[in-house]
Length: 452
Image (cartoon, rainbow, N blue to C red; front, top):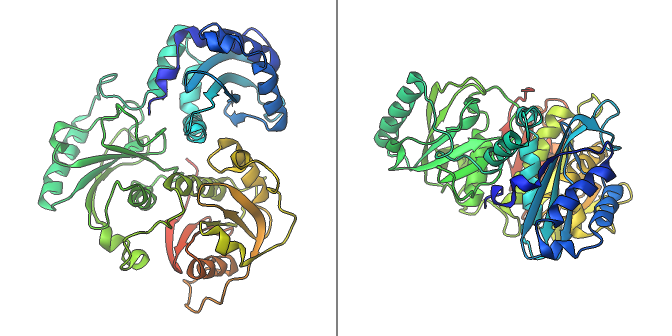
């Protein structure tokens, strides 16, 4: 899926208004001028304002993403407005102002609406990318930068300027991958900060995978890589995303349990690759997977697992209001899970539409993080719908010993993962470690997180 096809230079403008309603009027006007079926819609502005009053669409870094479902012929329409001086807006902190508004209109038949919202939200969390847009000289340059950012990683758009060492690393990786009989080559792309990455021709005998925290979607049509895996990471470690990336790759079918993977990495943002590692998937996940071929519970979507892991990683680093927090997510087999929980507080998610309480919506991030301070667990349905928060787990006793340092929250996660066909993800309040449990087996996804 390519998002850049829904952008147009005609719908990129400098905002004249100094408040949200005025800016939305400008963006709605330029949108309806482009499409006749939209020009007949009289309630676009009121619908956008109503949603804004219900839940803020501010995403941080001076960016707002107002959105609305409408009946129209196209699946999506984007209109982008920029204000260099910033506009008044109730959503951000008092010292912040909104500089960029991305208006998204989605057709009623668009099935991956939440995935698109999540994809845009992941991209705008890259502050350097947003600063680049805000500082563009004019709307033409702004349009060019938007097209590159939302068009995925396209080797035809910008040729990679590899240093001699990077070329040497790629050449040696090809030899190692052949000698070790690897099935795939995974490039950890956050090492390169200045230029897009494209696999060299010598990788053509292998499946190529890009691992990055800046990716939008894994199936962009024109990506030069066979697959793109997005994993949020706050570590300066060279291959810190590896375990999470492999886990996501297994659930998506990018990797199989019998694969060998040649990994290429470097220090994030260093513009230099310096590490080559060969990973045997069967050995890496032997304890967790045992003899089962299906790691993911049957009712859990891979996208939902990725989203929950991403929220857990962010909670681990950010905490709430300057203090660390610990929390637990129980994902999948919700009917059986709900038989083993007891509410500690009134359910904050009760009564809302499924779409409005789905973890795939980027606007649920702050809500989840705010409720993370409650004792108890989040219960998440396999399709991403948040069923409850502050739930006490009453699973049968977990008889196996846990690693040193694991407490009652980890014990509850292990127990519920044995008693039901679910995944449990724990954020440790004391260490910041994020741990996934499946069938009582613990898999640390990130050992020690650093801001960066």
